[in-house]
Length: 275
Image 1 (spheres, rainbow, N blue to C red):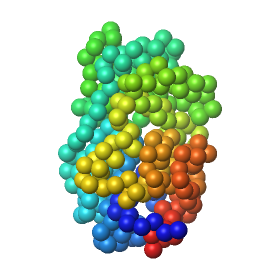
Image 2 (image 1 turned 90 degrees about the vertical axis):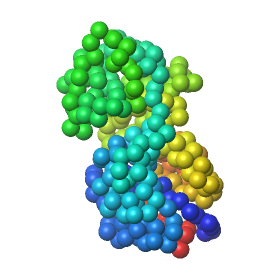
Image 3 (image 1 turned 30 degrees about the horizontal axis):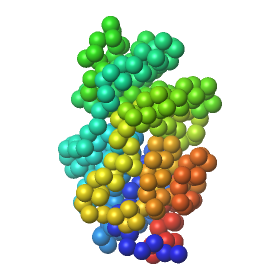
Image 4 (image 1 turned 180 degrees about the horizontal axis):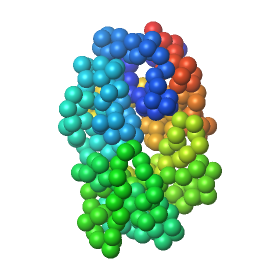
């Protein structure tokens, strides 16, 4: 059955539109550009920050049409053409400190992202040896409260089969009224990242809040994703699509399943259900 009156398409990047930073095909890119020319809005929702996202957005000409990207797993939205963050959510500083102390006590490396300092991750002594996304690490000293303010998200990173998975799943139960705990995998599904953010900072809640304010209805939106950080959106949207390369937990959250990322899964689904 065809999907009618679709007005917005939201897509994740890594593992959905890209695989190890490679596009599925130029054909799929051109197809998405042509959909925008026909009036359908295209929006990216990603765990990447704005700077890591805009090149892809511009390749797909999003800056010429809807001009919006959702970054850091739903922490904020921005224009593509210029950095103009809106709907920013922070984690309560006291909650950040409590979680940081728990992880440090258990000798678990943890990283804090201060929204206003893009080039540094704050960390404990167990995280100093790790480096992510060309950012420098800064050691949190003396547990001063200033280190825990304006934190947009915090995360840990370890092998996907680690026993630490249990620890992070318990965090959500402890702080369920204050935080969102989501997971994300690398494209090969060997490493897992647990991300702690404000309860309103996920791809589903934030994207729908924004689109609803513009008058769009849930049934007019399609969401594509492949990983744990996409699950809130896959559950929220009536027309949600998991990539064929997703883990089963992700597929279970979606209404539809399409082909693998590198097999033009986005385009194949849209051609089947829209054209």
